[in-house]
Length: 222
Image (cartoon, rainbow, N blue to C red; front, side, top):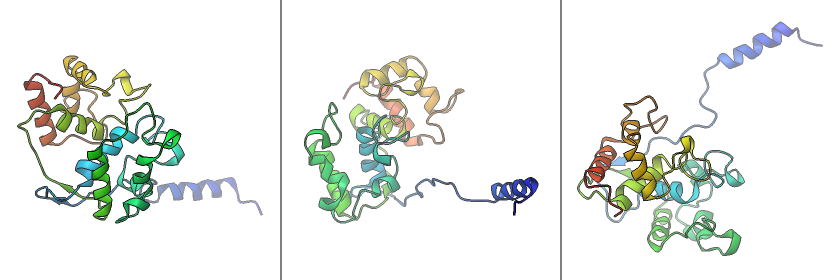
């Protein structure tokens, strides 16, 4: 028996009006330790920026059409390829030592260095936790230690590759300097202009202070 059109429409409208969680929920907020313990590798501080910078660019494991359907921009996505406590059985660690077309990140990108590889190994060995710690060093003004990791975690998923959002790249130091000099970057990340960045989130007060310190130091490539 065919249901009347209005009956079907009413049922569909009711379903849409129900309150559901998001189809693709974001990661839960991790517990944040008051200080960073030197023997612990923290996912939010150290591991996620590594994956964002090296694996989540356009055409790879980013947010849009990720390779093999695997996005490495979230804890949940990364954990699909991780066996907690067993780095040598975790795909995200094993691929760092592949050769040829199976090497990750693939050429022409540079392989992860020994420190990054050690961090991933140690994080998995420590249980692959979604953890974070509070550590705000605003004294160094270092591009490689502070600015680049912030951009990797917050911005490069949109502003890298062959078709960056707004035509703005953050792939190398010179790109970031150009964005600051154009008077667009700081108002965007301070969320004081018409297009606040990153969309759907914001940099912490610590991260903004680190940017301001680096700029005050003359934006060195250090």
